[in-house]
Length: 246
Image (cartoon, rainbow, N blue to C red; front, side):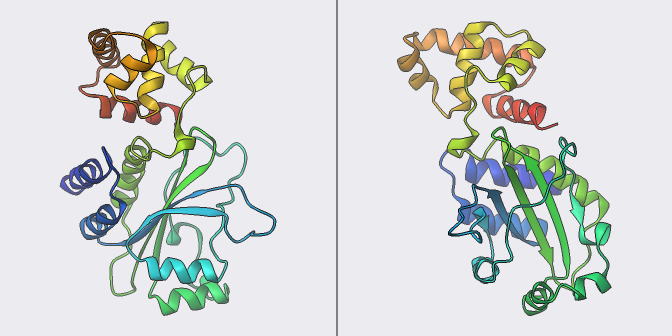
């Protein structure tokens, strides 16, 4: 599990405070031995139907740029009732080499960029958009193993707690927050503080915006950590997003 621990460390180092997606992309690719793109669905504009996703991070921007220009990148089709959880899929899980060759422009693109082995790791975000991690390797490399597939499923849950996009913010009155509070027997005050943590606020910012003392906010956070049986705020957020994306 050394590889998975390195990926966790890489994500927390580059994404916890002030997200540095460029250095994260370089480190992630080196650790896992694959190129990748992390992207999420967005509202499709009728006048711009090809811009159906927001690319958050990639170690191969030239490849993604051409992919976008060819209008090949779009929202992942997800059948209703298939979520959660979303499980990683390798190309060998669902499509043969013969079928890939029938994809025309898509196959030609893969040939040009030596994309041979492919793995897609999707996850449902709190706003019901899909966050997708697509990884690829050349024909000279080895296919993604079942163990790597499992590790990416775990790592994707970790990323959910670190991707701080505005749409990820959880409202204090959301069903997800209520469900989490019910599971861990959180008080209304603790739920309020947790909602602020999920919005990305620091303890001092929470104290100022909620008219509580800094000491009171710290006390609530300690109680939340104790009830959820986690050691720090990062693990708390990880546990929250893991619960609501199962």
